[in-house]
Structure formats: C-alpha cells, structure tokens
Length: 220
Image (cartoon, rainbow, N blue to C red; front, side):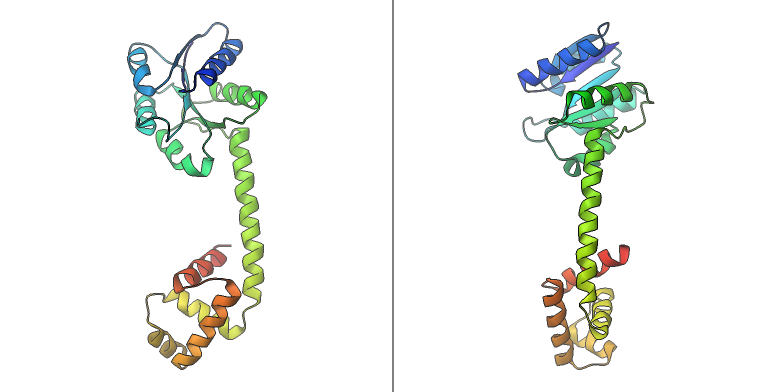
C-alpha cells in the first residue's frame, strides 16, 4: 500500500509518517511539504491513502482543486484532512473536494488511529464522521439549542400586536414603513413605536435583523 503525507510542518510531517508506519508496517510512505512537491511522485504511482495538511494560510496552493482532481481520477484513493482550522470554516470545501474525513490537529492519537482505520475500511466515496467531526456536530447542536432557548424567550416577550408587526415586517421587508403601516391598518407613528419596542426586546437594530430572527424562529 502506498501512503502520502502532505504537511508543511517538519515535526508534524515526521510524526504523521511515523504513526502511519506503525499502523501499516508493510506500506510505503512518502512525505511532502506541499501538494505541488507531491505531484510528480503521485502521477506515476497508485496511491491508497493521503493525509493532507489543510491550511489556507501557510501555502499559496489550491488544496481543494488538488484533492478534487485526484479523487476524480483515482476512484480508490482515500484522503483525510488534518488541520487546525475549525470544521465550520472548511467543511464546504472538504465535501467539494470529496475528502473522506476530517481530523483536527488536537485530536488524540487513538482518534487519529481509529479514523484512519475506519476510512481505509470504507468505500472511497464515503465521508467518515471522525471524533473531531462528531465533536463539531455536538457543538453545533448545543449552539442551536442555545439560540432556540434564547429566541423562544425573546419571542414570548412580544405582545400579540408586536408579533403581528414582526411577521408582517419580516415577510414584507422591502416595503417602506408607510406601506407596512397601511397593510397593518395602523398609523406610521404607531408602527414606529411598535418597531422600536420590538427591536429593544429582540436586541436587534434593523428590519434585516428582524427578518433573520423571524426566519430562524420559523425554522425551529
């Protein structure tokens, strides 16, 4: 089995290669600092696994296109992103490039081992939810729950009339205040007073913020 490590940090590159050598003692492992330096080696060999340092900042190379092209041409290739970036920042690009999993560089050794092992035992078009990925999902769910509780409490603070104004304003956000007042059957000054109270209670500052709040609550 041929394994390629792409990592621009010398110590991490060596540590990654050493770990892979212990996991797969019969494998041939090569390490490179940048994708461009690995290209010539990869072109003439069948590669089974790539551990790729996914870093937008340290190198001026298109990692997404590099991996996407490899995955398109090599159907059995497995690629794992190994990065300090938070998953929410890079998830879209990982899926676009068809990476097979994600590991944060603070991951425990046993999590790295279990992720690599799982990826190698799954189809090359499967994205494995590593412990790093599951930790991210848990954080997202916790944040959503916080938002839900907070939004629910804020929404409860609105009067029936303010709820009606919130709904009308959100669903007709491009309308002027005069147009909204007319649709609601109230005066312009009354509308402005309602909006002022709504903004204060919901801790927002504009119609766009109100629409965002209304859409978020509606989704939940």
